[in-house]
Length: 567
Image (cartoon, rainbow, N blue to C red; front, side, top):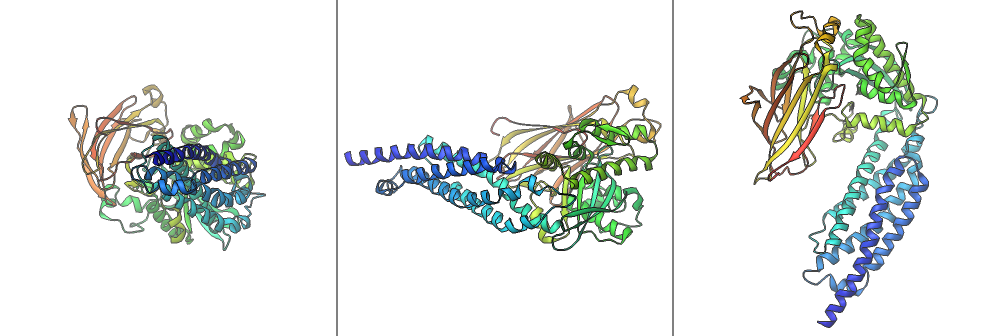
């Protein structure tokens, strides 16, 4: 017993030393990714050197015969193994993938990848791509090793395991993105052969599920890192097709009608961006004869962020900073120009300016990347490739815009809006979504109460003075907001009910891409708010965080998540 007590005391002292080294190492891991993204090579090298010292200390503290013996003991064995595993993982990371990433950080940081004289030099990125991909795979293996650690009895060690696991997850997010980008960017920017892409510029002033109608369509050519505009025209110029350009399934026909596949302005009615991209590609091919290699979507809010990276920009003869630029593109232009052709010209000017700024380079490359990342996170920047291999890399990222009811282990609730009258009143629509986890069920599913509120923010006196092009041509109720609201339950889930105040609300139920969706029509007068609570059940074993995906509007949707009871 004396010998056993001495052994455990010896191991305990070593464990505390290892724990301290591991926690310091976890803190250093947390700094490596942001420093690398910002191009702070010196700080990355310092953090790596310190991490290697911490890892060596942890390995030394968990080596020796006392650890071999303690690891075989009941009860304490799992804790001993946990500390030893963490030490080995930290050492492997510091001496392997992280060291490799430091060697290429100068190539993959935004400043290096920024265009120079209208062109991105793709060769350095092509050279380091295999290293980045391999490093990401090794970090994924490290994640799995830490995730496989069993129950740990000592709280301090359990805390260290959780800390390392969290920091590895954050790091993996960065390296996975870098690995995909390293594989995608060269091919999509024409490293091997010229590529052609269609850019959809959505106008949130006339809401559609993915954001708004495509007001402008731009065909660009990417050739060895250089991007040039080849064609630019209003989406309305595609005209109306006699029949759907691609077959519609029953749910698409019921929810959106044939106009989804007959009008260029309506391809974004579906909340599934890959489907919208396929429809837009086919319409463009039929009208221009060009089969593009992919589709990019962006809205004026995201454009304004990109354009504002280097300060105010002149559009339509006005020098505008970011917030005023978004407001002008989504509302002001329709008040200043009643002629749709003039409106289209202003949107085309802003789009051309954004592309020019992207390709001419910027003094704030990190700010530019941040602006694009923010737009992607908001669903305002989307990407689809006609190449199956490229699309596989895009799938599952914030850029894919695909309709899904599950993101990893997270159940996804979808809330989408479609304006049903020809008007530009989206500027006055404010949306708020509150998700309450009401109960956790034995099968791992959860009951959710999803409350969706729509508010018409326009004042009657202001709306009365708006031109008909904004309010709509219906003289009986000018300025009325009329739209369809679509709410999707998570994968494997279902809608139970919908209530407004004390009354049930009728829904038009459908199964769209294996997801249950309820649709209803809403009409709002200026100043009016409509609030409906949807009760739904998630799929089984969906106990992770609830994700809410909404239609990107002129303003961000106000989203809250609360948990009560057994949630």
